[in-house]
Image 1: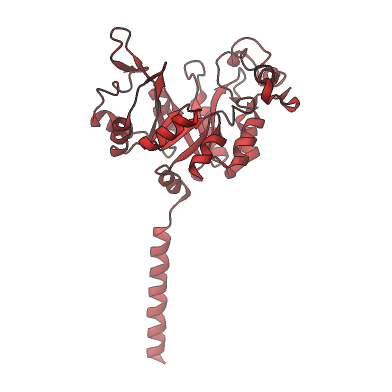
Image 2: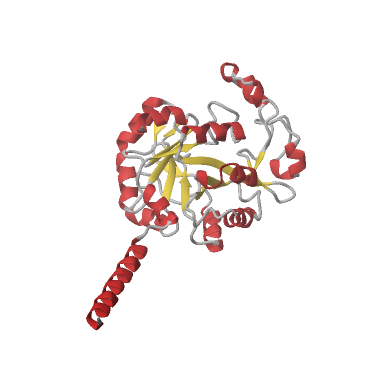
Length: 311
């Protein structure tokens, strides 16, 4: 009897130890999200914005229905401190309003028509249901898709949106988007990313860069904010400096018809721990080329086109 109890005790101990090891080996949702970045990501730029008014519920509904990896959006603040999903600083291009978005209250913005412009500009894709589309709040987007989607959020024009980082992080925490592995925060402004990191260092960050010819020497490429040297001069140390706070890098591919990155750039970034996401790629030949070059993901207004290559 005593021997049987001993065996049972040992068995239970081994079972408990195995269960503990299994628990320790389990991947958290946030860890899984970071692991998934090693695979190719389809990023719906402002939703399926080639088919519906950008940054509206219709565009995000369509992209989500197609099964994209990320819904991409820009976060800005209203005059009364609400986080809204909107790209431009001024509201004229994609609504019937005037002025800067952060000069208007949410109530004023909600009264605008953010869809008719698309019908007027895209007669072949016009839909009567787009007319009267509203500017979205981040709350509305999160409440619609919740943890059934992943979100790729840019802190847009942080210099015009003081307090944006704090408001955004509050929303991400309120909706449990960080620990559940649902969000990436991107910005061209390194300072904005570092502020987000200070507020919550679990939030995965993407450093955006934009390469273009130097005004002094057109043969030499420079980066818009100076966060890295140009691709021809960039070193492992430059990529590692970004990797200290970011989990990836988002870059343009072409500037006025000229390719600004190549396979070597992508591989060097990856070798230094930075997956490379390229914006904004809408033509199928460019999609194919960048996938062959090894890009880890593409931002596109036409996620349906890109999904054909990855399915």
